[in-house]
Image (cartoon, rainbow, N blue to C red; front, top):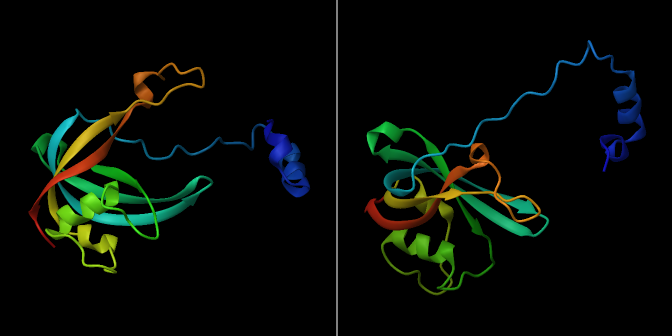
Length: 155
C-alpha cells in the first residue's frame, strides 16, 4: 500500500506541499543489541505491557551485569499476557523463579517482582525471516532473553 493511501486529506495535502529541500529525512530509532548466545547474569530494570492486533504482550527489560564485556546492555524478554496464568506458561515459570516459590491461589502475579532482582538468564538470537521464509541478513538479527534459569539475588 502506498504511503499516500494511508494518509488523511490534511496529511496528504501537507505531504504534497513538502519540498524536497525541506525534507530532512527520518530519525533512526535505537538499534537492537546483538550479543553472543549463552548464559548471562542480568538485573530486572523495567517492564511494560502493550496491546497488539494479536493480543497483549509484556516486555521485561533486563540489564546485563556479567560477563563484563557486555555490562550495561539492555535486553528484552517478551511474554504473552493472560488473565490467569497456567503453570506451563513462560510468565508463570519466570515469576516463580523470581519469587522463589509458587503463587498461592488468586495471588496477583505482578511483574514488579522482577525489578532489582539479579538472575541467570539465557540469551538467544532472533533471526527474522522474509515473507518467503528465508532469513534476513545478519544486520537485522538481535538478541533477546529467552528464559530465566535461576534467581541469584532477589528484590
